[in-house]
Image (cartoon, rainbow, N blue to C red; front, side, top):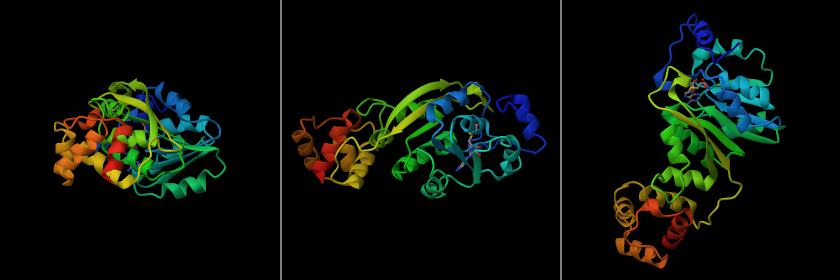
Length: 282
Ligand code: SAM
């Protein structure tokens, strides 16, 4: 069964009365080349793969061919009737129905992937929760090697931007703290059914074993980063002071001691400079 074929998808979905739910980010892949490439980039025969949102299983089947084991988490109960058919020949796949944002992923990894050398997350993510899912995966410090996911092209550019460049934001800093991000390839909007309004990119976040910077207080660092990027048009001093109430003179002095201009914008600071500023303020 070719799950990237439009006719096959219609034959599967129509009798089940399935209609695509925009609220669940349901844009299914119909480009045959994409899923094998994602699977190859994410895992090998010793890897346990956690997939979020299998849909009808087009990526799941390809992951199953490459990986040791696949656990796919799907929120939409209507796929309970369809997935057993499409995944019938995949003996190393298990589907769990539930919300990936609410399930105990650490528990699932420990239970299902104990005999795997490494674990990764691979998914064509539902776009309405791209950032929350990525941040949840990284912040919960799951024992994962990489997160290889399809996201909107603009989100990919923001997530994988260099910290200190115009494209960077608070999420760029967070992603770079936990992982080394890279954009793998672009996928145009017509590779999906129904086509979304924007093109997409597959990105790979190679999770770091150790953070690249030394922080006195991780929580304070992320609070500072959130404040620093809250008002992008303002200088760092103004936006941080407005958002956190930290005295402007203290901020100017800290910047000066780091050899930075008091009128610097947050997007001009590197990860190391943001870390030094946070450490100085704490
Ligand atoms: N993997 C399929 C593909 O590539 O064609 C489907 C991808 S579609 C972009 C996103 C999938 O995520 C849908 O199947 C949707 O029902 C599911 N989904 C949405 N929110 C979810 C959540 N919170 N937890 C798990 N799955 C979710």
